[in-house]
Length: 197
Image 1 (tube, rainbow, N blue to C red):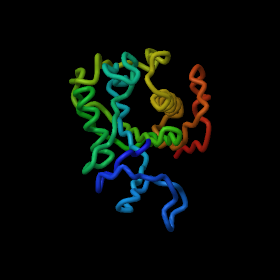
Image 2 (cartoon, rainbow, N blue to C red; image 1 turned 60 degrees about the vertical axis):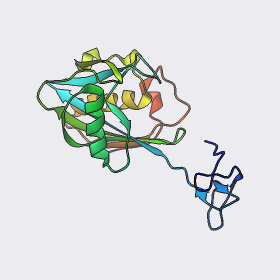
Image 3 (cartoon, one colour; image 1 turned 180 degrees about the vertical axis):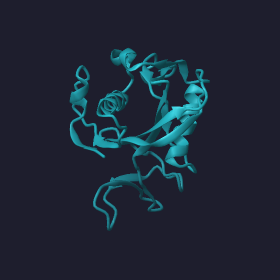
């Protein structure tokens, strides 16, 4: 992402070069020498289960409007990743979740994102669409809308959950989803450094 103006002094004299003592180019204000660091975004979410079903949300916003996803979104300042996952579950599905632990950590270096999806169970039985969701449903494994899933991270998380059900234990999974992706085959999206514990 290009930076046109310095957020410190307002100058439009911003250069892209390697700062002294660094090893990669950054946007640097030539007026006040402020270095504009850009870091990956964390996306936090939950795989929420209830009565052997999974809570899924139909997106009411872009990107990927009208496709299905797990409740997830960008982490905010001044919250933990787990708090962000619970907040996103409430915002998108109006559901309270009892979080049991981190389920998947997926790196997406080509879009500068890290997905951290927790595993948990629905508290009570109440859920409904939040402002960013057109619908919220509990679906069995056999009813997952594979062809209408929003993102490769969601496809992989669900696939790993099914794998764990067959294994008999929900485990922690860590890996990278990198380009090129062949979305017609979910296994082709999981290309490097997969670890399961």
